[in-house]
Amino acid sequence: MSTESVMSASSVSVGIDVATRYLDLAGVFSCALLGGAVARTAGLDLFGFLVVGIVSGLGGGVMRDVLLQHGTPVALTDYTYLLTSFGGILIAFLIRVSEESWNRLFTVLDAAVIGFWAVAGANKTLTVGLGWLPAILLGTLTAVGGGALRDVVLGRVPAVFGGNGLYATVALAVAAITVLCWYLGIPEVGIGLGVALALVFRLTAVHYGWNLPGGLDWQPHSKLASLMRRRSRPAARRGGSDSREDSS
Image (cartoon, rainbow, N blue to C red; front, side, top):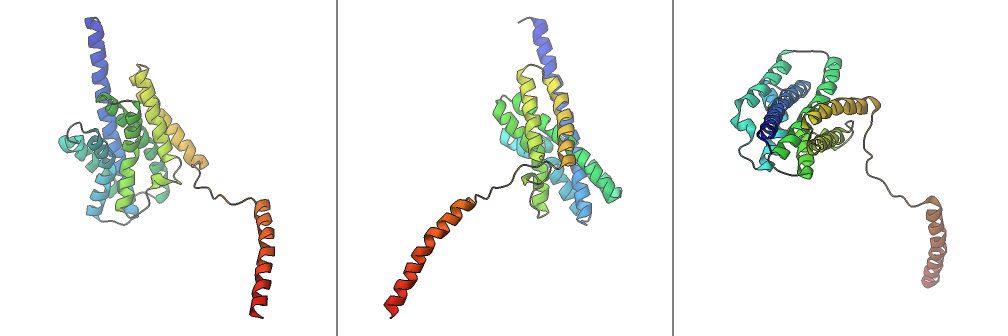
């Protein structure tokens, strides 16, 4: 391999690392802002805003970094992450808008967060040398982990578990696209494509109310059930007559 090729590959790697960092920070800010919005809806005080916002903004990335076991979680070594989350929380604490406006903003930010973090999580996993499956799994975890922790802290069933417009499904698809582009040698395309896919897929799912199916209730077929009932009746009658004869 020529020197020029090595330098080109190195510059691409550095570029991906920089893009991953900024996507990570964008996700932190957006999810901290969303956490602050949820704290306002719950009527929490300033401390509540801080706790919910920090958990929401940093939770997914911290879980990812702990599972990667590639050093201390970046949120604890790079103060930019904590300061960025404070910025989102402060905006949510100071600015009061109508519930309708919050709902519209929440949906768009939610879609953006999925894209930012699924791409960042998948790229970071691939960068440390893990394969495609861990990259998809940790990309998805990065995207949904903070919101799930936020809901647990507030005593709610995490929205990622259902009825939330294919939230985890979108994250999974974005992480998969990111990984595919990485293996095709076009990671830069994967970043843009992943974020665009998150916005389009998530907003479309919310608009049309798409959700995954719930658990199926396997009821016996009506004809089979009626046949079984008819067959059980003579036995019941015989049992009744026998019991009457015994009693006499």
